[in-house]
Length: 313
Image (tube, rainbow, N blue to C red; front, top):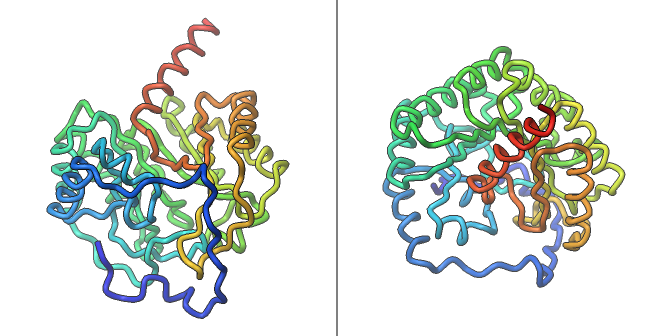
């Protein structure tokens, strides 16, 4: 949904970072399929926000052709100002109390086997939007009981009890992205804290050891390989099951500059390293995003856990 105020007011006075030409391996075709337009019409009719549009995801044509939509709840305006993100920032709108039911109705219309629900950060709310997440999970379960649910939540920084409320609603996958290496947090994710995000993922497993956990990072922001491998170790120390690694793409000239385009062979090296460290599932490629191929990946994730349990029985 289109916001009525400047999309990134906090970035307006920042110096321009020229947008580099994308290499051949990262270019995607413009979305033109009939299924894409049908999905777009449904999203518009239900007045849904999607991270696919708000974050300018490069995979929107492919995903919407397959009617795979990542719904963004809690409005379309974020209270944080991460330098990599294209979601609008500013003063959020009031919560829509009917949004959980609208989301459930729309997703039932798509007939998805697996859905991903994410949100903007809502530091203005006492619980960070946790109860809204829980209500949305329950509404989807009531409307589409066979659908598996993945949530991609904010960090709920200084929101006591918020994480517990979402976990109690029993999503099938709990995702929270670290986004980058600790050294770059001050410039890339200034409102967040690396070790708080890590503890959040660890806490999910303490509350429900059977719940799948997932996290992701971007590369090409200025990190080095040693730092990426350390993030992998940190995530494994929190018993995270699934890791995603994708190329950072600069939304506008006011966003964080791209340090470099990571070549496909390096992504494959990261994938092998991560599997060697014990992740059940790894998606590592230039166009990987948190919810890219999420349904197929969830099926593979369950199969990987079953195989691991069978091997240790």
